Amino acid sequence: MAKKITKTDPNLVDLIKNLKKKSNNEEVAIWKDVAKRIQRATRRRAEVNLSRINRISNPGETVLIPGKVLAGGDLEHNVNVVALNFSKIAQEKIEKSGGECISISNILEINPKGTNIRILE
Image 1 (tube, one colour):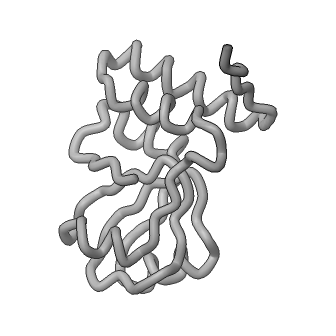
Image 2 (cartoon, one colour):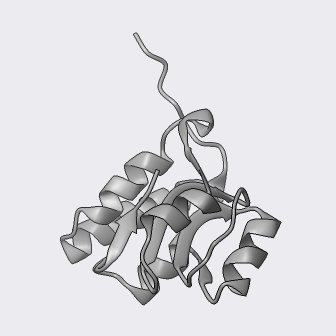
Protein backbone atom coordinates (compact mmCIF):
# COMPACT_ATOMS: atom_id res chain seq x y z
CA MET A 1 0.00 0.00 0.00
CA ALA A 2 1.32 3.45 -0.90
CA LYS A 3 2.26 5.81 1.86
CA LYS A 4 -0.01 8.85 2.13
CA ILE A 5 1.86 12.09 1.54
CA THR A 6 1.14 14.76 4.13
CA LYS A 7 2.38 18.32 3.84
CA THR A 8 4.11 19.87 6.84
CA ASP A 9 4.19 23.50 5.62
CA PRO A 10 1.12 25.15 7.19
CA ASN A 11 1.03 27.85 4.48
CA LEU A 12 0.90 25.19 1.75
CA VAL A 13 -1.81 23.25 3.60
CA ASP A 14 -3.89 26.45 3.91
CA LEU A 15 -3.39 27.22 0.20
CA ILE A 16 -4.58 23.75 -0.81
CA LYS A 17 -7.65 24.08 1.44
CA ASN A 18 -8.42 27.54 0.01
CA LEU A 19 -8.08 26.27 -3.57
CA LYS A 20 -10.51 23.42 -2.93
CA LYS A 21 -12.93 25.71 -1.11
CA LYS A 22 -12.83 28.30 -3.92
CA SER A 23 -13.40 25.54 -6.48
CA ASN A 24 -16.55 24.42 -4.67
CA ASN A 25 -17.84 27.95 -4.00
CA GLU A 26 -17.29 29.23 -7.55
CA GLU A 27 -18.17 25.88 -9.16
CA VAL A 28 -15.04 25.85 -11.34
CA ALA A 29 -12.69 22.88 -11.72
CA ILE A 30 -9.45 24.79 -12.35
CA TRP A 31 -8.70 25.44 -8.67
CA LYS A 32 -9.31 21.80 -7.70
CA ASP A 33 -6.91 20.74 -10.47
CA VAL A 34 -4.26 23.19 -9.25
CA ALA A 35 -4.69 21.96 -5.65
CA LYS A 36 -4.20 18.38 -6.81
CA ARG A 37 -1.01 19.32 -8.68
CA ILE A 38 0.41 21.25 -5.70
CA GLN A 39 -0.41 18.37 -3.36
CA ARG A 40 2.04 16.09 -5.17
CA ALA A 41 5.41 15.19 -3.73
CA THR A 42 7.88 18.08 -3.99
CA ARG A 43 10.11 16.27 -6.47
CA ARG A 44 7.10 15.71 -8.78
CA ARG A 45 6.03 19.36 -8.72
CA ALA A 46 6.49 21.43 -11.88
CA GLU A 47 9.70 23.38 -12.48
CA VAL A 48 9.39 25.49 -15.61
CA ASN A 49 12.05 27.64 -17.26
CA LEU A 50 11.28 31.03 -18.80
CA SER A 51 12.25 29.71 -22.25
CA ARG A 52 9.32 27.24 -22.12
CA ILE A 53 6.92 29.97 -21.01
CA ASN A 54 8.19 32.15 -23.87
CA ARG A 55 7.62 29.39 -26.46
CA ILE A 56 4.14 28.38 -25.33
CA SER A 57 2.52 31.64 -24.19
CA ASN A 58 1.12 34.58 -26.12
CA PRO A 59 1.69 38.27 -25.26
CA GLY A 60 -0.58 39.50 -22.47
CA GLU A 61 -1.61 35.99 -21.43
CA THR A 62 -1.84 34.68 -17.86
CA VAL A 63 0.06 31.44 -17.26
CA LEU A 64 -0.18 29.37 -14.07
CA ILE A 65 2.71 27.14 -12.97
CA PRO A 66 1.80 24.76 -10.09
CA GLY A 67 5.39 24.78 -8.88
CA LYS A 68 8.50 26.91 -9.36
CA VAL A 69 9.52 29.23 -12.20
CA LEU A 70 13.24 29.06 -13.03
CA ALA A 71 15.35 31.64 -14.88
CA GLY A 72 16.59 29.50 -17.79
CA GLY A 73 16.19 31.40 -21.04
CA ASP A 74 14.65 34.77 -21.78
CA LEU A 75 11.13 36.10 -21.93
CA GLU A 76 10.55 38.18 -25.07
CA HIS A 77 6.98 39.35 -24.45
CA ASN A 78 4.89 40.42 -21.47
CA VAL A 79 3.22 37.52 -19.68
CA ASN A 80 1.55 37.45 -16.29
CA VAL A 81 2.99 34.43 -14.49
CA VAL A 82 1.20 32.86 -11.53
CA ALA A 83 3.26 30.33 -9.56
CA LEU A 84 3.88 28.78 -6.19
CA ASN A 85 7.50 30.04 -6.17
CA PHE A 86 9.80 32.14 -8.35
CA SER A 87 13.57 32.17 -8.48
CA LYS A 88 14.91 35.66 -7.84
CA ILE A 89 16.40 36.04 -11.32
CA ALA A 90 13.25 34.69 -13.00
CA GLN A 91 11.16 37.27 -11.18
CA GLU A 92 13.49 40.05 -12.35
CA LYS A 93 13.34 38.82 -15.97
CA ILE A 94 9.53 38.61 -15.95
CA GLU A 95 9.18 42.14 -14.59
CA LYS A 96 11.82 43.43 -17.04
CA SER A 97 9.81 42.05 -19.99
CA GLY A 98 6.69 43.91 -18.81
CA GLY A 99 5.00 40.94 -17.16
CA GLU A 100 3.86 40.46 -13.61
CA CYS A 101 4.66 37.80 -10.99
CA ILE A 102 1.56 36.77 -9.03
CA SER A 103 1.25 34.22 -6.24
CA ILE A 104 -1.46 31.57 -6.42
CA SER A 105 -3.19 32.92 -3.30
CA ASN A 106 -3.41 36.40 -4.87
CA ILE A 107 -4.88 35.14 -8.15
CA LEU A 108 -7.71 33.53 -6.17
CA GLU A 109 -8.79 37.02 -5.08
CA ILE A 110 -8.08 38.72 -8.43
CA ASN A 111 -9.72 36.09 -10.67
CA PRO A 112 -11.99 33.81 -8.59
CA LYS A 113 -13.54 32.13 -11.66
CA GLY A 114 -10.12 31.34 -13.13
CA THR A 115 -11.00 32.67 -16.57
CA ASN A 116 -8.30 33.09 -19.25
CA ILE A 117 -5.64 31.18 -17.29
CA ARG A 118 -3.48 28.51 -18.93
CA ILE A 119 -1.83 25.85 -16.75
CA LEU A 120 1.72 24.83 -17.76
CA GLU A 121 3.87 22.02 -16.42
